[in-house]
Structures are given as C-alpha cells and as structure tokens.
Length: 523
Image (tube, rainbow, N blue to C red; front, side, top):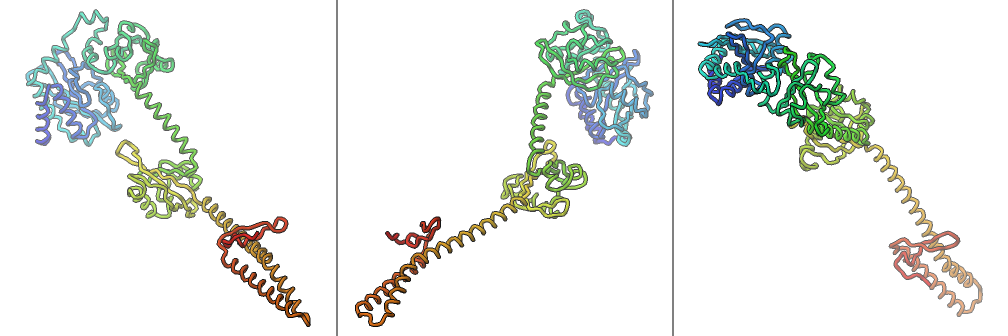
C-alpha cells in the first residue's frame, strides 16, 4: 500500500498548474521517491483501439502523443512484469525514456477510467526490488479519477480526431507525420524526417533555423546532398542499424559546417520513416576541441618535465605518473597506478599526512598549495631520497572530487654538487693560505735580510782588536739602528689587516708589508 504521505504529495501535485504539468510533476516525484528509471502513462481509446502517451517522468508537454505500442498489454486490473528484456527495451524506447540501469525491467497496470471508453496504462521501469514496492493498483486508481474529473480526456479525443487538411496539402506531408505536427513544431529541437530511401520528407521550424534551409527546398532531396562525405556512410545502412546517438556535420546554405548532435527516435518507425531529432552543438564541439588541444599540450609538458609529477585522488589512488616520476621512484606508470598509493612514495604514512597538512595550512604557501619545501621520498628500492616538494589541490570532476598534484625534484645531484663545491672551496682556501705563508715568508726574508746583514757585518768589525773607539761607537749605533728597524718590520707583520703583494724576482710575488699593514710604502 502507498503511504498517506505519498498519496497526499501526489494530490498536491495534481492541483499544481495545468493537467499536463501536474502529470509530469507527479510522475517525476514517484520516479525519485522509488528510485526508478522512468514512468509513463498511456491512454487507450478502447472504441478506436488508439493509444496515446499522455505523461512521462522525463518529458514535459507531451499533449497526448499517438503511439502504436510494440507490447500487447494484458489486463485490465492486473499487474504485469515484463520478463523479456526485448519488450522492456522496445517499450521504454517508444515512451522516450532513458533507462540508465542495465538490469531495469518494465511493469504495467491497466485500469478502465470510470464513466469513459478509456483505459489508463501505468508503466514503470526500474530494478525489480524497487518495482515491487509500487502499489500500481492504488496509483492507477488515483490517476484514473484525476483524468475522469478533468477536461483532459475531451481534449485528447478532439486532438486525435482533428485533421487539418489545409496544412496537409500545403506541406504535402503524409498523414502519419501530420499527426505529430504540433509536437514537432513546439519543440526547440530540430526534427528531420527521412523517407525509405533517406530522402528528406519533413523539417520543422527549429530545424530551419539551425540549418538555414527552408523545408520546401529540402523536400524530396537525399540527405547525403547536405552532409559531409564521412557522415554520409551512416545512411548506407538500414534504418534499424543507424546509431541511436551520433554526430552529423551539415553544410548550411552559406556552405559553412554546422555540427549537429542527433538522436534517432522510434516515432514512425513502423510507417517506414526515420525521425532524427537534433541540436546545434557547433560551439560545444569547438570548445571540446580547444580543451582537447589544451589538454594535449599540458600532457606534453607533464611528460617532458624534468620534475617528477605525481597526482592522486584524496583516497591516495595514483592517477598520474610522468616519465620523470618513473625515473625517480623506479616504478612503471601502470605499476604505480594499479598497485601503489601516494603514501608508498614517502618514508611513512605520517610523512604523507604531513604534506597534506602543509597543503591545507596557509603558512606554507597559500590556500590549497604548498610552496617548495625540502623533504624526503622513498623509491622502489627502499632508499630515502632527499627532495624538494611542492603541491596543490585541484578539482577533478566538477566540485565533487579533488586531486592532489605533487612536484618532486631530486636533490641528490644538487647535494653532490654542493659537496664538491665545498671541497673545492676548502682546497682553494688551503692553497690561498699556503700562498699567503709563502709570500709572507718571502717578504720577511726580503725585509729582514738587509738589517741582518748589516748587524752581522758590524758584529765582525767589533771582533777586531785595537779598534778605535769612534769606530766601536759607530758600529754599536748601526747595530742598534738595524735592530730597531727589524723590530719595526716585526710590528708591521703583527699589524697586517689586508692582503697586498708586489713583484719580486722574476714572476714571484711577496707580501707588501707597508700596504698590508696600513702604512705608507717605502720609496
């Protein structure tokens, strides 16, 4: 049994707007409430054996679309489950219902509408457990009472019996097409009807606006006259083998190409016509091509980057592993994406969590971004590799899923280079130190050599016996003066503040004590 809440909701929908809107809204409510794939309501005129689709959960403004059902309905007042998948697919196709669930089944209930010559046929599609929750007996009773108390049945009858002879003669359309004229002309989609040899029989006003052709210009001409050679191959097959969805390139009056997205309808299929419903998708196709071009360019950048780039979903599943990542971590791309998660590339789970925390922390780069940070990763051999890591999060599918993109720069070569540079600096400093000592020794030898030679000379003079007193005094004074000169040289060495040299003998340099100690160079 249906709950009182559901019945009350249905009654509320019945009194909300025109009857066609109320029917559609109520069926959409039931489809969502019971998790179904689609619902349709068919009206059978038992006096004339005529069927009309009067409501659908997926289509608005049907206004009683004539049908020739491919299923022989049993009943009345009997719930019937379509056990044949063929019957389910045929009926859903005729009712223009899109079944997303492959295992969907069909179920219907036939009930006479009180005080009329009509039967109401309530058809639902979905998986069997959901269908079994429906109380079709109560539902059809509610809908039959609604239809009995409205002017809808009278409108349907008038519409079924109305034939506009003037329009029929003017447009020279077969009677079967005239039946659907109002439906075709009120839709925003283009409608193209082809005959048995794929000649153009009819084009609605929306189709004229999209293609730029008048319907009278096209009538009787093969469709292949107006489409690309590549797509003309579609119409070499029988109508039942034409795809249900396909793209079609059409040449306009100005010979420009319009990209159409086409759906093959089941309408008029028994009468030998092929009904194509289409929309102009030129802009969306151009945008797709641009996006694809941009995507290809970005993928080339990713593939040729010297930086390892790895992307994963928030559940750690790896979805991108570029060649540089394969080189750094030692995994093949398929191996990484199928058998490893992002935390396997880090020394520990905690290390990966720390990266995620830093991405979320504005102090490390900004919202959803991590600026280059020194860290470590782990390769397939278990080696801990020093690396620079930067990362950010991006939307993956709209706003429902996100991915983390990580850029990893191997620092091993850089660190080895830094070690070599440090070693070179130490060697250079040692050589500079040795050169300084050598030049200082040379300067000391040069500066001290003269006073030492003078002191030695006067010392030898003092050793002579009977040396006159004035010569002794002069020798002693010279020795004292040279000693003071040596003391001054030693003082300069102690006051060295900079490093300046001067030419000595040949290519040799010696330390310039005067300039290096802040003094004035000797002339």
